[in-house]
Image 1 (cartoon, rainbow, N blue to C red):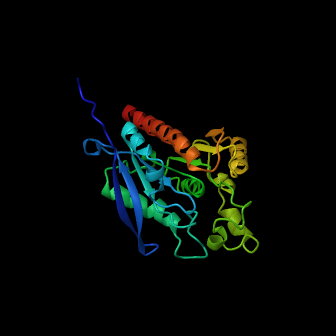
Image 2: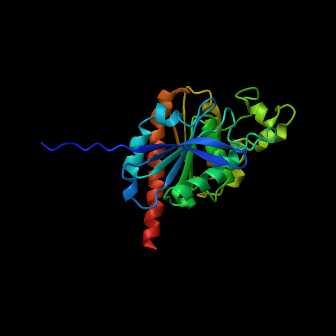
Image 3: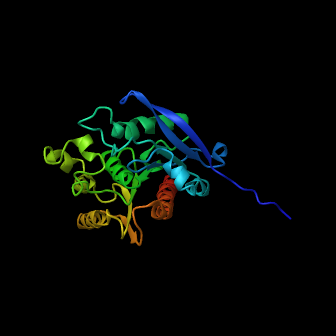
Length: 266
């Protein structure tokens, strides 16, 4: 009887220097099992939620390691601080997570691993605060990311002015409304043209962010921005996120494969 060979992605936990914040940031990097045999690989950046950390995805949704093997891609999960919302805070210079993730981390990963160092080989997604962060960073850095996703993302921060440390990062909404208007994803669609960014967005119907995701979906439709939008039963919890992140990774794999096919045809 032939034995079954089990394959398992490898997980590196690294410290990535941030010159912007003058500290090192813990980051989980998942490589497919046959990483050493493969050429340059696409990378998916996965962002955690409020009060989470760099190890959340790999510990609470371990099936993402199987997806790395299945699709032959890398997954990078940086620490985003406690309530950073992945902004460069105009209030607190200790929180410069836009610079870290979109610029410093991407450069560091491309330098230390064999990656496709191009937007066609990069995607970014996340949950809750990280869902907002992923769309925020992708829209502001279209030269870095070709695809983006959000699962249960806080895609409009304005209905929650007293929640999740946002006022600590932007100042109070009542005092600095223009900052809040500028830093919320739902007001950033002017940065997109049709097909500038490949998008997948989902949210559970029992989630407190469901209505803001519905509104984002409607605004994307009104601007003729193609996107995949998924809803279904589920709340703001890991039971839902563990299920839906597989849709994102499958979606990103199709994005990477399509661009790889077009490159080979040239």
